[in-house]
Image (cartoon, rainbow, N blue to C red; front, side, top):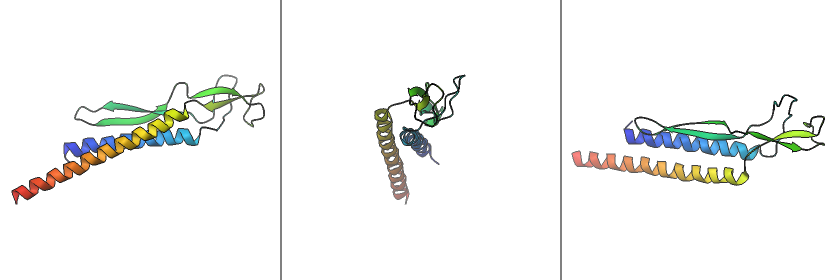
Length: 130
């Protein structure tokens, strides 16, 4: 694979991670989890994307829980509530997650265009040689 294509593919993978993280956060937005006396939490933990540049170009990305990944909420009727009526709910913002989805879409489109352009250039070079 040519270097330009591998850089664009790494961008596509990063955009996919960003979309998956945001979608998971949105889907689990209204879930609750039990909070133990020691501060443990057994519910969904909000995630974010980590990204770093590669030496040869492109990016490496992954997901990790954000800090704090949950917040406490008073909900005495919730089945996960402790003796004080406290549950844990995922932290984060719906606006932030929808923004992350839009960023992922834009990054995906940009990297696809890079792949298309690289393909067109390669075809042009082949046409010149023949």
